[in-house]
Structures are given as structure tokens and as C-alpha cells.
Amino acid sequence: MCLVFLSRISASLALKIKNYGQTNFFSVDSGILFRPKENFRFGFSGKNLPRPQIAKTGEFLEPSFRFGLAFQPVKEFFATLDFQKEGQKKLIIRSGQEIKIN
Image (cartoon, rainbow, N blue to C red; front, side):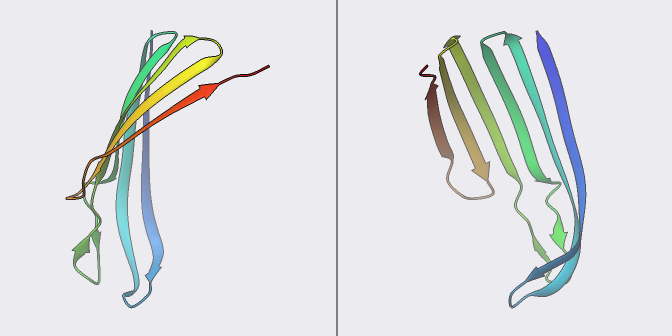
């Protein structure tokens, strides 16, 4: 069993957006990865926490949350499923498979 915690704190010192000008903001990204078995993993992450404000405009960056699963039943095959939600946008679901061919 394995547990990994990841975190990143960032400060934008020179964000420049066309028609908005230049500004600064502070943001936190954090995530956790859990591997209860050698062939199964799942994790959760959050970005733009806690909803940073773009100083000059008064607008906010929407937080983004992700939950993912990964399963590797045999050495040659790997499957993933990922869910992403950002602000008021629709839930995005992604999946993927990887097959190793020698």
C-alpha cells in the first residue's frame, strides 16, 4: 500500500491577459494519490484553490477538481478513467487504455 500527497503553491507575478492588462495572484494546487494494490491506483486533485482573485479585474479563477482511477490487470495492459469538474462547467469524463506490444 502506498500513499502520496502532492502540493504546489504558486504566485503569478506577471500574468498578462489581452484586454485585461497585467496583474498578480496567488494559487494553490494539491493532490493525493493512493495505491491500495500494486495494480490499482486512484487519486484526487484540486487546482486554483482557494479560488484566487485576479487583483485588478475583481474576477476569480474557477477551481478545478479531478478524480482518477487506474487499473493494470496484467503487465501489458493499463486502463484509466478520469473525472474533471471546473466551476459551473459540465463534468468531463475521460478514459484511456494502453497496450504494450513487444
